[in-house]
Length: 152
Image 1 (tube, rainbow, N blue to C red):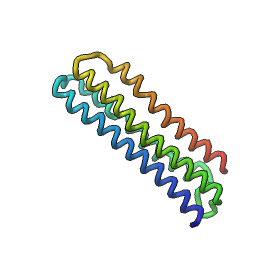
Image 2: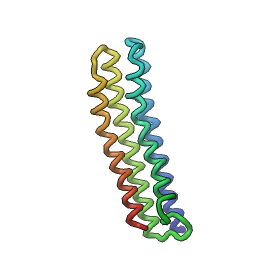
Image 3: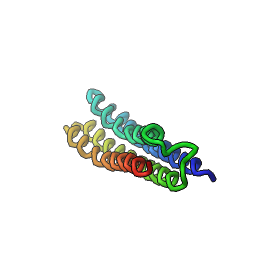
Image 4: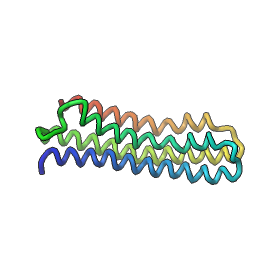
């Protein structure tokens, strides 16, 4: 296998897994929003924000491609096996972290949506708690950025 193939498999995993996580996360939040609107349709704006939060992990995976494609020369026909292994590892790490953090963030948001629908004023607190899974996706994205810098 050519090294560039391994690198692109890592990038594919990064984009695919983080995108799948976002799809699951926003669906979890969206399902909760539909249920909560039956009880309290006036809080749709809060439901929408809490439901959309897990979408950012997919964006981190997508942005990761541009980190490796545009901010350096590691990704190309001249890619060494060491560089390809680093790109594969960074892509796998960001993809897995994006997958699970988006799903867990969707669950936190869904619980907040359910509580708001039941009449509790927990939007701000839910937003704060939903940021915690996001932090790990940001750390994984930053790690991919640093790994790209290290293999130049």
